[in-house]
Image (cartoon, rainbow, N blue to C red; front, top):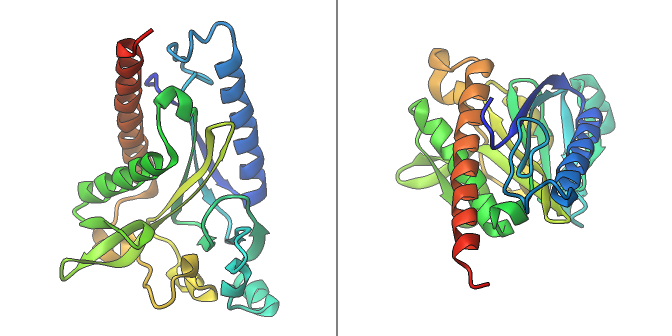
Length: 249
């Protein structure tokens, strides 16, 4: 196991229990920051290290609705249709709007001490987007940011086209929660139950839709995403340490 993150593969879980595990991880990272043995966030461990933890999960089918005032209006399906589709609805305290999670979608929850990483929220979101862009590139899928919409998008005619990964985070005591959701082999029909992320007229896609039979298995994508995120966080941690070392006393 590499040092920067303790990585937990939670398998397949309903949304609520996974949120409880995020809260527990947040408490461990906060306790590590406040520990007199933390060395001012310079000491990393293979467990609940000073920098943080990474939880990987596939959720049971669920529509999550943020506290944004307009988010609930982007739920298109009736309770009856949701029940027939086997999709529950859950409130969430992350940023963003409304989205769908389900089997075949890789959800990553980095629980990170952004103080130790010297990261502001904007730069942290760009780190997540860059990591997903790098993962998609490993499989030959060109993706980009859209300056008008958070997330990662495939490219058509040089422009952002269909969303392949959604982002939504919350920061408590400058420790991150929630994160990103990358569509690997997700049931894309379920996105028709909502206006995804509140973006009218924007398509949603997956690695499976882009690659067909060449779509990688979930376990492979988990490994690649974990490696890419760990590399990015290790590099950022090194930059943060260098900046602290050179700062005037």
